[in-house]
Image (cartoon, rainbow, N blue to C red):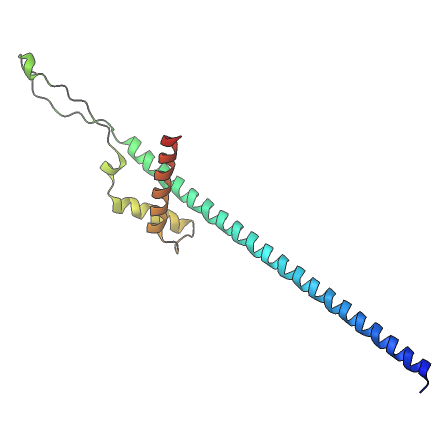
Length: 151
């Protein structure tokens, strides 16, 4: 072989190695870009599903609340106790203020729990743990009340 041909082969070999390295780098960059896009897509999917679940929980809560408030508001809310005739002595005068009934006076906690469970089932939230959700909601409302009192 002639020396000029050998030099030409070496140069072409070096060019092929440079092209190969450039192609490998471009493939790696495209794979990294695909992985980043997949991670972003999954995180957005999780956010959308979380918002959907919160929306369903809110809808179920509103339906139970409106059902209970309709039923309680249709019942008489003030109950006056029968008083004996007022004595003539002012020392024995008593003044009784009637108390409004609450939802707890009309429904047991089991009945309320069943109503919430039915609303969750209607919204296809059967697999959620209702007790942990209620505990979280109660904790959040207590924290919100504390924050309002502080500020």
